[in-house]
Length: 119
Image (cartoon, rainbow, N blue to C red; front, side):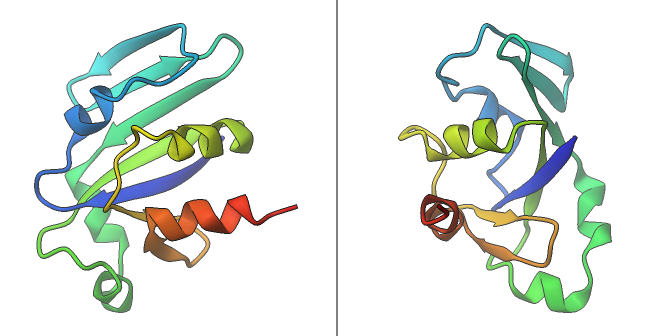
């Protein structure tokens, strides 16, 4: 499994993601209050909200996040293509940031553009 971290302001929470229509999903199941899974048949996407993720960031990384009180949701996936498809949906949240867990923290719009330019 791979993951990225979605970062938003204090209004960003698991319900923000849960309300999105994930095109092509079979079912959406809540696992806990702060975690749910989107089932695509053989593929699954997990979303996990945790207030403690902020503790994994050092000062320099936090400086690249423009939110006063950032909230973090881990998006766990197996298929990078499915992850890209979901983030590229017209109805997916904009104005948030993505941490790709490889040193890049950028606005979601730039992140989408980055993989849109991949050949």
